Structures are given as structure tokens and as C-alpha cells.
Length: 275
Image (cartoon, rainbow, N blue to C red; front, side, top):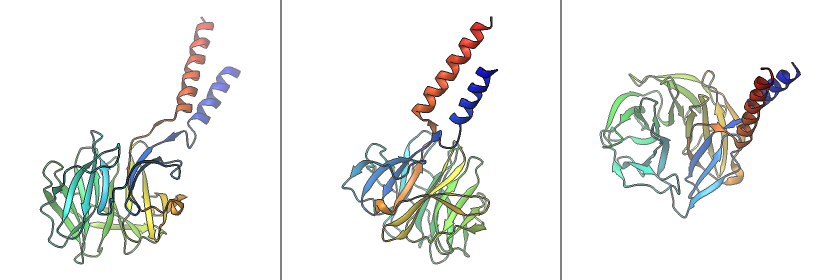
């Protein structure tokens, strides 16, 4: 019984909060860095690329095959789609995104588990949601919502539910994947300015965001998809960064793997001794 209790205690501690952390790739469009960090320690960053300005990048996300995609928008009417290297952040050959409303600028990209890629955009006429063909760049309008001027980023959860952040009202919205109609969820509690990043961690269905206020002031946060409230995990102001981000699925940390291996070995010895 003591052995079983010990193993149970170890298992509970192993799977406590923080035992798993997911990897984030981020383009710092303010200072021209391409970095990676994990969701537990966002201030511990590894710089993968420097010297390139990702200033026009407006969103990044991974597809179901693990390829990283980026959308860029230098100005309305000049929206492009690129592959993006996870080794150094280098952008692949630009593919023009066609089929957008004339005044729309793309502000975000998200790719669902079924492979469907969505774009969020904004203009004086309102926010819009599109699907986009990753091979050709052809976008198809799902719908527009005049009450919101700019969906600054968009993300889709494991069930295919779409969420967007509005930079004008500083709030989280749900967006109907069939019609583009938006429904207010609630205030983030953070002042959004300029470009923002957002993505779901598919391993936990947690929505993370790199929020930015201006002047290098920002935060790495999780967002409650029921209330819209953002919880600050770490202030990123010390990095002077403004990030577009994408999350890779979580894997157990090395220490966790060692504990799991130990648990398995102990269980095997116990079974053997009981024969």
C-alpha cells in the first residue's frame, strides 16, 4: 500500500500544472527577431533569426502537417501568403491573396484541425472572415460584421469554434464559421494597440495571446473563452517585443519523461515480486 501511495503521489505531482509546456514560435515585428519559447516561461527565449524585419507580418499558424504559414499586409490591397521557416523565420516566396474586399487588410490566420485555413481582416466597413486556399492564395468571403471594425487576430479551437479579438473594443468575440456573424463574449481587460498574436494550444485547448499596448509594452496571456478575460502569464515589456505567434502541440518535459519511466519501472518490479 505504501508503494502504491508513493506512486500515486508521484503521478499527481508529475501531472500538476507546469508538467507540460508547449512550444511557441513568434515573429517579433517590432525589433526583427524570430524567437521560440514555451508557454510556461515566455521570457526565456531562444533567438532563431535576426536582421530581418518582419514588420508586415500580421499572423502565423501551423497547418496539420506541421508547416508554418504567415500572412503579411503592407497595406490594403497588398496582402500576401508565405511559408515560414521554423529554423530562422525566413519567409518563402510571396503568394498574392486574391478575392478580398478591396479595402480589406489581413490581420490574422488560423488553421483548423480539418485543414481549413481562415483569415481575419478589417477595414472601415467592418471586420470580415474568409477561408483561404494555402496553395493558391485564393480567399473566399464567409461574411462581414459591420459592428466591429477590425478583428486583429483569429484562432480556432479543437472543436472548430472560431474566436477573434477586436482592437477597438479590446474584447473577445466568437465568429460563426458558416456566416461570419460575430457575438461578443467579453472584455479582455487589456488595452490592445497595433498588431497582436493569438493561437490555441491544441494539446490543452487553451487560448494564448501575445498582447501589445505600444512602446514595447506587452504581455503573454491566456484568454478565458467563456468570459473573454485575459490572465497575464508574464509581461513581455522587458523584451521590447511585439509578437505574432503560433503554438506547437505540447510534449512532456524531459524531467516528466524521467519520472514516467521511473513509475513504469517501479510498477514492473512490483508486478514481478507479486508473482
